[in-house]
Image 1 (tube, rainbow, N blue to C red):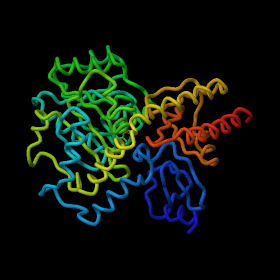
Image 2 (image 1 turned 90 degrees about the vertical axis):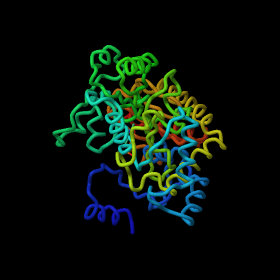
Image 3 (image 1 turned 180 degrees about the horizontal axis):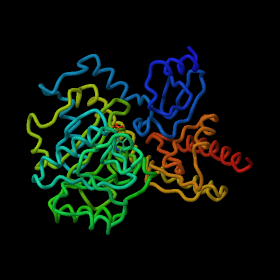
Image 4 (image 1 turned 45 degrees about the vertical axis):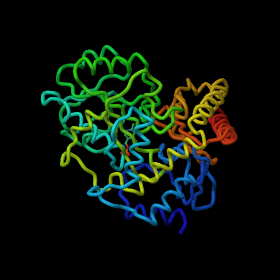
Length: 395
Ligand SMILES: *Cc1c(COP(=O)(O)O)cnc(C)c1O
């Protein structure tokens, strides 16, 4: 089979709900991908932030191979060591909460929405979320997502969602009333274009939630698992959430989602209130445990911080050369390059030259390299980006 054969197979049999790049990927190792034609691609956006410690990390591969030989799946009618251990490791690295496991970010946010409604008094049913946020594609999660383009064609949406401009403290005060069950927010908006919450904003959310008996829910699906240089994005602030959701990098490439809640709140999910058939199965949890161990054994939180700083320094140098770059923002390995024109062409020209980056909100190049990225790999990426930007200037 060649690339064209695979593309035709998709044309005939796979629902075309994604805008895909015309490449068939056959291998991934560390920060490199290989396509069906044998071309190598340096991946600065591995798996949309899923492959947070690189593709096929040897420790994750070893852990899932071992687990696959022992027990792939068992339903939540029973206990497993792996689910308990992963919950413990997460709790110790976050705020000491208890965890419910599911299979994706959207599901983790659904769980958070259901828990917040169930835990708070009946008259509290509203969720305040931010404009440009992204919380997933299931009906409640997409309604929480403050981007009208994702709501088109799906009306009527579930009731009770209120949107406020991100980082706007006055708007938050105005939106708050006694009907608010929770505020759901990303510490750094990913899909929304790498927008960081200010410390004052996070503190205001915390204070307003406490004042009104509402819950502070942080969506750490993209910011979590070390990407920003700390385990979770909220750890750059002086606040603690009531509920936090995770997915993406948590399984190192294996599907898993998780919602952690403070114990008193978690107690509201009694048997029968919520469930997931696949959630927290031993394969996914073995992968999650291996991810956490790899991050600690290889000092990857440090590396994320250092390499993030290095990447931003190199990008600042490009900014001096190319007026198309407006500014650089982000934390750790969550980096946005704000352009003053659309970036889609840059993404496809980089790919032709063997570099994968992403563009979001039309004008923001999003670079989210794995936490195993090296200085040499960043240099290589910058060289390609430099060439592409130079060509763009001539054109
Ligand atoms: C990707 C993402 C989600 C959705 O996760 P899925 O696994 O695709 O359901 C939710 N929230 C944030 C912040 C995300 O980046």
